[in-house]
Image 1 (cartoon, each protein chain N blue to C red):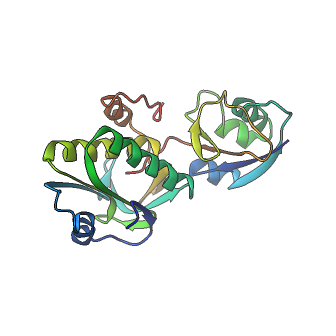
Image 2 (cartoon, rainbow over the protein chains, first blue to last red):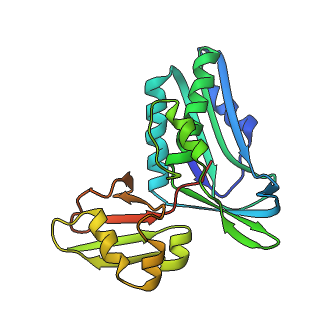
Length: 157
Length: 83
């Protein structure tokens, strides 16, 4: 199975995790993170979200992040799915799932990948509210999260 | 040398998805941004120095001191907000 998918379609957490660890008896831990669309942002109701990306660069950037995660942590398998296009409130946006022999490496590998993805993968969110659409601002807190792993990110600037 | 410029998100909405620019040899990504700033009032506003604009060369995040080559693909976009 591909490690990285960027797609409009939804994903099935159970099926993805089953595929991730299928046939690997060395797996003792699976950690999966699912990000979803909140129905409120900056005090306003959000009806929908549009996700734009940079085709080609997105996939390559995430593949490089997965390589780095596998260098740093003892991961047996990794799966990243990121949706693009139009999403509704409460929809799933992103899945990062990793398997490892033990939980410590799995928790860390999953969190590392999410922190990396938030600030270094070329996706942009646009929220739709009753007052119109607006691009979501990047957060300095996300750069700080990546800095904990020793990687400097000036994304939010 | 010809350079292909691409824009994403709010920059794409303001400047279009792509344009081709003729640059002198040995130019950098930063010099390309300087030239683009002079193209229109909208370019000057959206690519203004001091605005948070990220760039990529050959589909990798880069700094503005990176050197351009003939046919290079350079992208400018706002800070990323995925995940």
